[in-house]
Length: 391
Ligand SMILES: [Zn+2]
Ligand SMILES: [Zn+2]
Image (cartoon, rainbow, N blue to C red; front, side):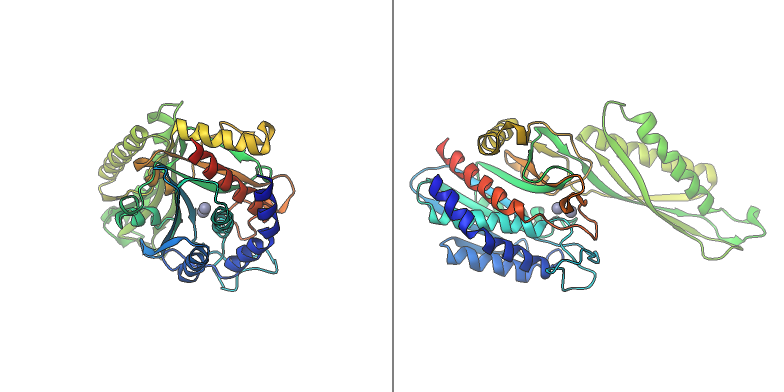
């Protein structure tokens, strides 16, 4: 154990540089060619057998030792976001309008640092699959990898993933069993009316007024239909209609983000929103079309695997730096689809709190992954892997 600590500590600078290199060269969903090749070539150099191009740009590295039948999957995500970076750091994005604003550069670097340490460590016994997925940010890269046979080609007994969390002290770990992150559906409502002269509204069917009323009526779905003890979000994030002050338009469009923390509430939201929109449209003499695009499902962490992951963290950093049951989040995450098929757990590592740089929230132009976490995150993966195979 002492040897491992020294080896990982000695090499961590290399992975901080690697993280900054990935940060400088961000790539959007399914375009992570440079990042994937960087991951694949490193894994190969350390003796992993590497599968490229799973789910587009996904990479799986496998290392098998000894005779144990136990199989473990660890996942990191690789994609960046279409945001113009404002951090001003030396390793800032070299691509205008594109940056690693969610720390996936750090997740990749942490898992690679663990991969190298585990490759040099001959004391464990089992099959380790390191899953580097594309397109976590809405593109469903996890699903694409699964459609390409991820768990048929690389069967696992459990899967784990780690995400950084601004607002939590750096190096602290946060766990939650049960529903931990929300489902997220993308809903478009098109209100078709009859356009006309703004001076003669009685000769039109105004979709803009109907859409405005629908926006207000939608506020009652969460407050009046969902059990107050359950979680739901209905956000109207976009509303488009009309071009001139004296013209009644023929069309109004609304775009919604709809979220829930359990499948029943998710269904109720769909049922109520569709019914409410239809009734509202009828009352205004217009026609509404609802397009429901299912996004990520609710992320549910398995109890046993979460307990195991908690224990690894407590043993490593002490109970005072571990939150055993953190709050559920209304954000969503496509690791949820892997957890639908496989027991496992999704955990958080604090990126920094208070006035520290790491406290800046993800998806913000000023966000940067906290490099102090690379060593602790990698060590956590190493410890979890070794503990898993000792089970
Ligand atoms: Zn994100
Ligand atoms: Zn993320």
